[in-house]
Structures are given as structure tokens and as C-alpha cells.
Image 1 (cartoon, rainbow, N blue to C red):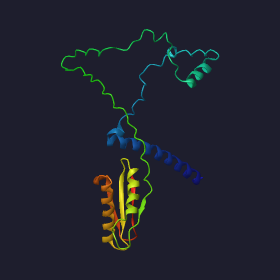
Image 2 (spheres, helix red, strand yellow):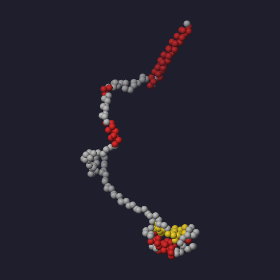
Image 3 (cartoon, rainbow, N blue to C red):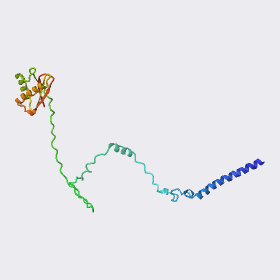
Image 4 (cartoon, rainbow, N blue to C red):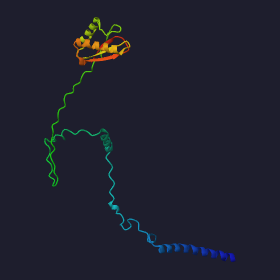
Length: 216
């Protein structure tokens, strides 16, 4: 019997303590003040009237059969050219339009400068490859040009035209002899009528003799 009264008393105390806890939290918020103690704001639009469903637009009518297919075909085909009748009344302006008169704004008409015609393009033919060299034989250890070899130089000069001539001398291991032979070839070319500025002289110690070559 005593146990039943004790359990009932314990339930009453638990309920009272729970109710007091919620009341104590509210009292704490009121005592603290600030935003937490203020009343909850009304949701947005709570003061607006209910929407009028009569303002909702009516549903659109269904497209005619084949209209969507025509639009798709036109989009895939691209923009078509205008008809000649649409362009009949159009004409390009013959003069610069007048400038607008805007207060406080100074504008000047652009000066039209006629375009300068470009000079005609000149395409030069490709230069021919160098001619094969004409070998010249010298006596061992000598820079004297034999008469037979001088005739070979004359034959090369006869085919020169406007080409430059390269004169190359080899010195059998001696650079001095190579220079002497190259200069002897240059002198022979000058005597045959080749201008000095059109002659290129080269010398190499290794090798024998020399050669001349037309360079275009």
C-alpha cells in the first residue's frame, strides 16, 4: 500500500518538475531579453490577400499538325536568302550620313581616304642549281696555269651569262700554294671578261689543282 502511494507521489513530482522546467526556460528568456525574447515574426506574405486563380492564363492551344516538323526543318536548313522582291527598294547610301546635333558634343566627319592600289605581285622564277664545277690541273708545287687549262676556263666563262664564278684552289698541303692557285684562277677569269665583284675566291690546303664553278 505504501509502495503504491510512493509511486503516485513520484509521478506527480515528475510531472510538476517537467512543467516547471518549461516555465523556467521561458522565464529565463524573458529575463535575458534580446532577440530570443521577442515574438516570432510572421512568415513572408502572411498579410497579402489570397491569390486570384482567375488571373492564371489559360493553357495555350495545341500547335497545328506538322508545325513543329516545319520549324525543325527550317532550323536545320539554315537562313535562306531573301527574295529579289524584298531587295528591290534597297540601295546603298552614296554619301556619309550627317552627324547628329548633340548639345555639348563636338563631332567631326570622318575623312574618306581613297585606298591605294597595291603594286602588282612579281613572281621571280626559282634560281637554277649551281653548274657542275670545271676542274683545273696545275703542275705539282706550281701556281702557273697551263694554256690548255686556260682554254677550259674560257669555255666556262662563255656559258656564264650573269652568274657569279667561284674560283677554288688546293695547295697539296700548303695554304700559301692554295691561295696562289685561287688568285691565278681569279686573274684568268678577269682577263676573260668576268668582273672582279662577280668572282668568289676560296682556298684549301688539302687537295690538288683547283676548279671554277658558275653560281646563279
